[in-house]
Length: 104
Image (cartoon, rainbow, N blue to C red):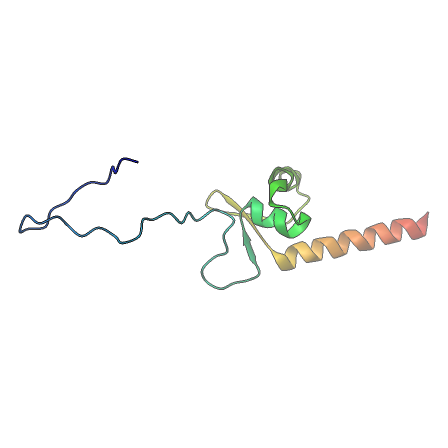
């Protein structure tokens, strides 16, 4: 594999030091925020993992957000939500389903 890193030189003409480890860790949009706020879900994959247990259901998150079915907000261009808001939504949906069954 060819190394395409730019060779810099310091003021004495010696090659500049290179990092000992390449930057291979990619931060995806579904990574938790570094603030430690465990209630915040950033990205459709994180929301899908919370709602459906499967991050591959992210298209469903976008669809339901567009319809207004799930509470969400945008941070930059990234869809976000909170666990507490999603739990309230699920509780509300469950109560509506139970009352519909009792009425029938």
